Image (cartoon, rainbow, N blue to C red; front, side, top):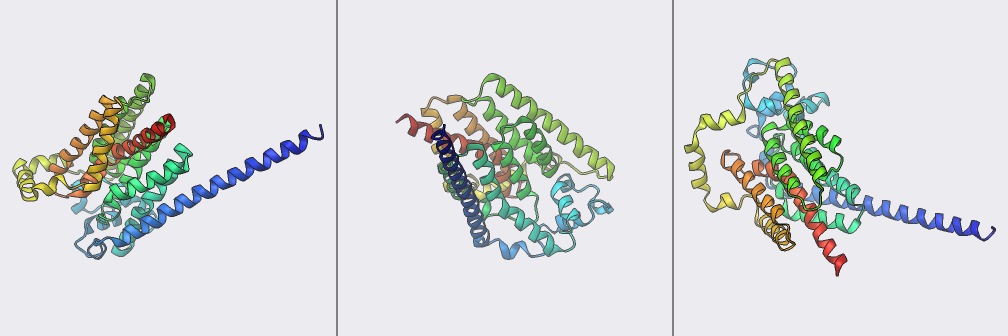
Length: 341
């Protein structure tokens, strides 16, 4: 009896020491991702232009008057994207042009460390988390190719959380928020993620059906709340789809012709190389449907890019949810292979 007590105490101390070590490592990884995010943000050539008055100033004005809109805002298509301007208004970040841009900057910098926290919680594996940070940093160049003022950082942040989330009720809540942040691009990104989930080799049929039901319910609820918001404050925006139809196909063909090969290179060489590598690994592991779904998701994002004139920021938002999920599955494939050998 006397020998058992010290043994239990020693085991408890060892477990406590291991827990503290894991927590310290997790904190270090989050701080590392935060430092990388800051470095990438300030390395961007977009900073000087982002603080000029021609840079998405209409979102600043929208944020100022979001709860008491003037007539010039009533029919603007961007009033559908109400979440980030509403948050800025509520926290006083809409008082000036500079304050709103600083708010957008902080939101952009927060994406990588918050994703890191979510991924670390999902996997509880420091090596996987480190690889996740490296892959996202290298491949997803929104962190230094941003345009401050648009609702992109908040939408990207939420869409990444959705891809990293395992709880379907939380998925519903996050999809609702994403719909309020940017409904059109959220629909594109979530449809791509639903396609990947439906073709996932690691989910049971019941898990796939449950996710699809919750995702559709989240979209429905998000649209309902958005329509309620627009009705309450008497907004009558032209949808982005209607905007594309009104412009006609000729405008988009001309834009594509002008860009040439740059259109296809919009995501960046490193992103495309990673995407090809990931799809190849999925294919050789006989995840045929999942590999095809990944390629189709990228094709959907390219379609969104084609029918706009805003460049990379559109593709970055549209591809976020499928890209983050593909990155998670890619890392799992690598570690599963290592465990087998």
